[in-house]
Length: 462
Image 1: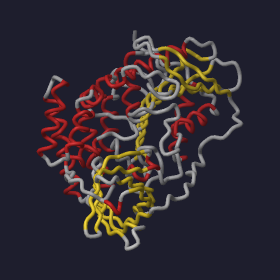
Image 2 (image 1 turned 30 degrees about the vertical axis):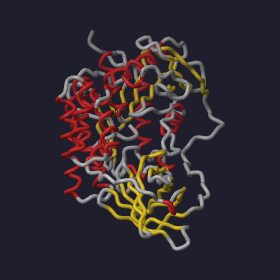
Image 3 (image 1 turned 90 degrees about the vertical axis):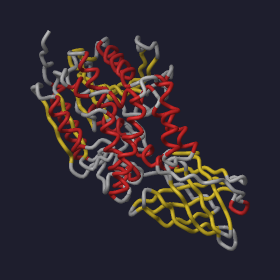
Image 4 (image 1 turned 135 degrees about the vertical axis):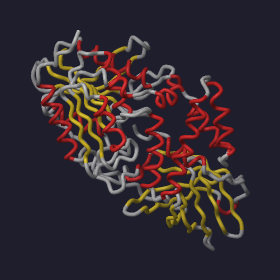
């Protein structure tokens, strides 16, 4: 998953309301970079004359975030609605610079904004594979019979005629492309390249509504629906002569690590399962812990981080207490408004918490599916993962798989949710880290997968 919404929800509950004002001298576009420790995050303010504003964080792929702006006596205040943050500063005498501080999650960081757009330098991503490749890459598509949607992806095949073992890669939450591209990192391309060089074919697929895949009714789709997309990919592969139908395995990242056991539980022919930062406890528990851990990694005082986690749990409890999804939004909006959230923030969170995807994620119990998996399983998690806590989820996965014969559970020191070598594990670091996947993690994943893909298929009870 790119980002679970918990940190945003939590912070939103504490967001102050700010009235719009005429801003005259500060109207227009402003450019600067936020220095958070060793990390530099470019920001752009777009301020309108009526006091409305928006914020771009280009490196994070976040554009048009709603904000409000106020200006009086040379002082500037720009308030970001979601996620909540505030810039407080001073306009220079020549009107060309805003100098002040960015306030977020209890931290205050210096920030200077100017009128001149910066020169953009492409991010360095040294692990991204470059051609020529010692294997074949084929563009493929197939239809999911459960939804009728066409899905498109890339199948990489080792040299020779096969039949080859194959791994199906399953992305995390949010609409993602077949490479799971994030901040110019392409982790699934890196993983597919490494596996195919080890004689394992790999299928990676665009999510619904991304790239070559059809969208359908995405607003109502849940993790269970996405599991049918994966099952359709498995069926497609088993119909190919160059694929060994008995050696089709699954590799899921984050929400994909929830979806993989759902598919494997229903399909005992799945040959192996790899869970990359997969969940072992229900989403309601994951999100509460995630909220606290992200806040702490971002510099929030422990008391504030715990308060955010408590408020997240309260919002989720309100959503879960209402069986009728159509009635969830007004109840959540009322709660957030009572807690002081601005109306736009309350509306956004009301829509999220009333979505079928969110309700399903909160309530699905991964253990129910993990207990039914009989294929060999590798579960790995970075110990600095602030989105899916290793200490919370790996023991739960291990307990649920107690009846399985071939299970490897590995916490990986120093790595974050993307399996990068990290300082704090905060999501804000992802864009700054040049490494796409730590070599130590890549070796563990690829070596385990290649070894199990080469084995005869496991036997299962009829």
